[in-house]
Length: 401
Image 1: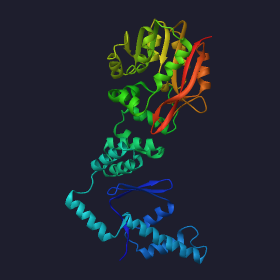
Image 2: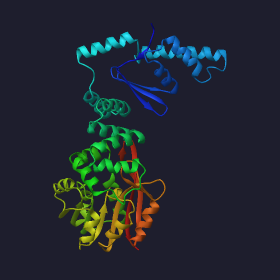
Image 3: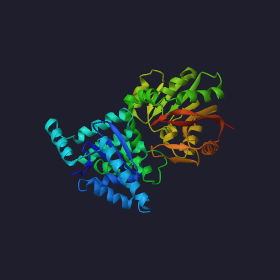
Image 4: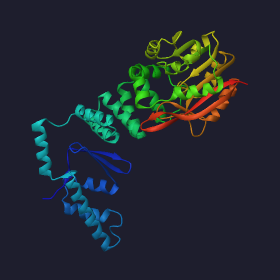
């Protein structure tokens, strides 16, 4: 009896407009529209080809409009089943059972760990959609393994599948409630009111994990150009001034500090992450380094500076007015503040699904004025890549009126 069923080695995932299917053996990825998804559901081992054709002829669009349409629908359904069978998406029940037995006899069925490993490999190779499908099935096999849920949330997040990301991260957080990174990401994914700035514990956790490969990832994989463009706006305002007292807010590993070091008589760095400060110290360019939250440090220091920089630091702040006012209080009479933010296309500032804030030029202008400063020079430029797409930055230099 001709009773087609889904190949058990083909992993199905539901999407908004149908199904996607990843074939573990052929490494092929299939996208099924609603009609094909409906046919696949009929191929459940209980319907013959003839029954599937009869059901589809009465249900699919335009099938009942005229006799010719019905004939065309039947032909199309038969052609789809034939093609799906040829591509190994569909099998006969005895063939599928034989394949299962062979798999179990050889190496057993794929486990959750096997599927997660396949997902990791596919992600590394850039096949994020296929990786998501494998990870989704890994979670179905082991729904109480936190790391599987976290990685599923990350893959859903990369793909922009907000509902899937919310569900995976939400389940993960029930098992690991102290994960500050995921808790913060869910704030945006759930469209909750954003905090004034990214929580300190989130940043500490992020860079505790990220510090060891920060530069290879940012500079190598993502093409990070923040320090280059920030230096360019500083050059426009300060020309060849040197012998400066420079403060590097959110100094990280010291990439921006290295870019301005030639101007410095004294260079001070502040960062919330102890791991990042440790790597900045290895450069040997800072006269002082402090592990502290930048606004707290600004409130307690008595030093003044000729140049204050914040490269990729204010992306963790919503309203920039409070931090700019504190920084302005630490400027020398003719000092300037140079910083970068991720550029927003509209509005003022907002928390995005990546957990960082974007800022519009109008907000930067208003925040500068609230600090008694004005925009001396700014420019928009490529900042880095993210998930295969370019991120635009706004690079700004502020001075007194």
